[in-house]
Amino acid sequence: MPTEFPPTIADIGCGFCYVPLNFEFSFAFQPIVNADDGSVFGYEALVRGPKGESAYSVLTQVTDENRYAFDQACRVKAIRLASLLKLDKVLSINFLPNAVYEPAHCIRSTLAAAQETGFPIENLMFEIVESEHVYDRKHLTNIFKHYEQQGFITALDDFGAGHAGLNLLADFLPRVLKIDMYLVRDIDQIPTKQVIVKHLVQLCHELNVRVLAEGLETEAEVAFFRALGVSLMQGYYFAKPGFETLPLPINVN
Image 1 (cartoon, rainbow, N blue to C red):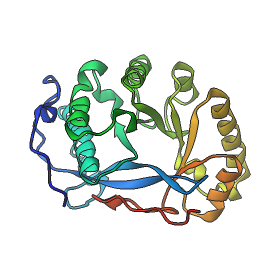
Image 2 (cartoon, rainbow, N blue to C red):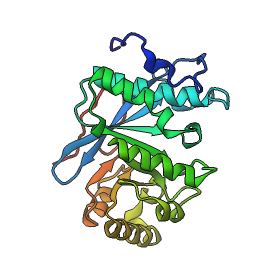
Image 3 (cartoon, rainbow, N blue to C red):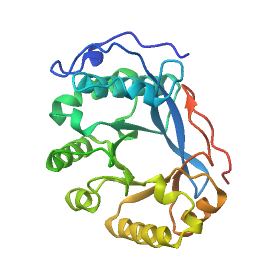
């Protein structure tokens, strides 16, 4: 296991949201591939237990009381671990929109961790999971705008599976939109999904939003998205997540 950095002020965030966590966690990393040239665009940090246990085993311990602290701790640990693994590509981190009460304050520990480790700000991508209910969409758009002002890449995850949908795109355009894997699965065989995704990709093209197809498992699924001009891809077809490692993708040119 990589050697940890010593504790710093980044561990306790901005004070208001710090509650000691009574559980440990780590990360697995899954590559995001640029299918145009077979290069690695970046890696998504996926939360795991301290010995590689499932994300569910960790997330079931997150409560309303420790949600803020957990969100802050995830950012810091993901950046530190990626730095220790010498990641020099994009690092994608999921964040909990309902755990950010004020963007300028809640981003301090993230900036501190990046500065401490020398991880480039412009290589940090923050994903908001569209399937999580967002109680205040205006607040979410403010978070996105503040993050882009800091130089982060913004991404909307699981698009097509959640609560906001096109309404969220009307308020704010992320740099990257990740199509939900339900729409991806067996898309080469299901005409309805094909129509939906084709129009979604065209919409993103017109809005200058880059599309990422996630959850790809078969060559036929990959071929469908390549035919649409989608270059960013992620899924078991290329690599399964590697616990505390940066696995290299397979099945690329």
